[in-house]
Image (cartoon, rainbow, N blue to C red):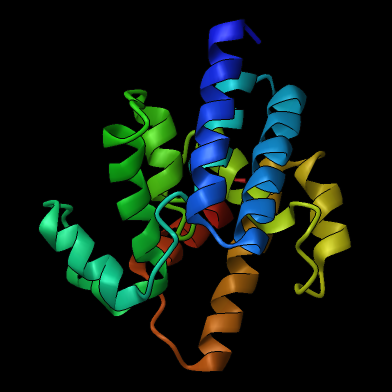
Length: 194
């Protein structure tokens, strides 16, 4: 890692530490480090993975209503589908913040931030890495299948994506909440293509 990139990461960490709750900040660091580890495993650019992981939740502060207002104020497009699944909106707003506040221009990093909660069909390697890292980072402890998913993350990334998406769809169906179409299309894509 070159010195300029390392300084940029430190600057971002300091700003995120001020904005995010302590637990969200710890989660963010965990996703950043886990993304870097998965990048090493699968041959992705480690710096891109670390940065994408660090910024994945940069828009996750405030209420869902305030996030909708911020998106509206800054011209961040939210589809009807997004508005029906408010838990995904922080990814869209985070993508905007990554561009405007943190100077990210790399489309793959921006897509990784935007789709880290829903997934989507045909995800890039970096998108898969950040999505999975968000699910398995060390402070996560809620999912019953976490030990096997963590192992799978380092042995078969596409199978891991499918298992997480399938579990997420089942969980949301059980709760009776709207499932974003990107999540359904991602699950179907991985089922067909793994």
